Image (cartoon, rainbow, N blue to C red):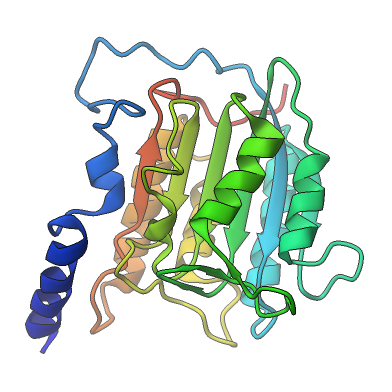
Length: 259
């Protein structure tokens, strides 16, 4: 049964991508680089001061709010300036399009500063679900890209989307040489752990666990993916296949550390 489902998924993917995920295909695009290309220099942004926004998009379970709360603590301990924590349970900082746009406008990164966005919610191929947003309950890749581009421009930017089918956020219109993008799943796969009794989703829990244990964002991507794979091993489901894209200016970028 699992094999048959995998074949059906691959047949669908042939139509969309030739059975190759967005992240894999775009890593070798002009915005990225071949990971085995030694001629690509290390990132010039190693001493960046990071300004962060954390977004919980859904209050149907506590796991999303738990993740942004605890990640904020991790980020602050690493010297990251947390500008805003957005949640559908907050009146002052709602997890909505308008709330995100307002928070992003406060980033205002100067020379030597960069943007870091972590968003966790339920998701679908067309975007991140924001059920508390009565005007528009889906944040699409194009909408997020417009918000981030307006706020951060050419400053170094890291975007993490933790949701089902979140690989849809890694596409030609969202990648750039100055960006790193992580997704909890490929554009055709579910992400796991969205259950009321869980503290975090699988991906959020692994990210929180691994952040600070490794040196670079590439190493973090690998260690989080391995952690997720280990947690999913007992499930009779297709693996979520977390994705990543590293822009050409972001090679071997160190994780934030307190100075």
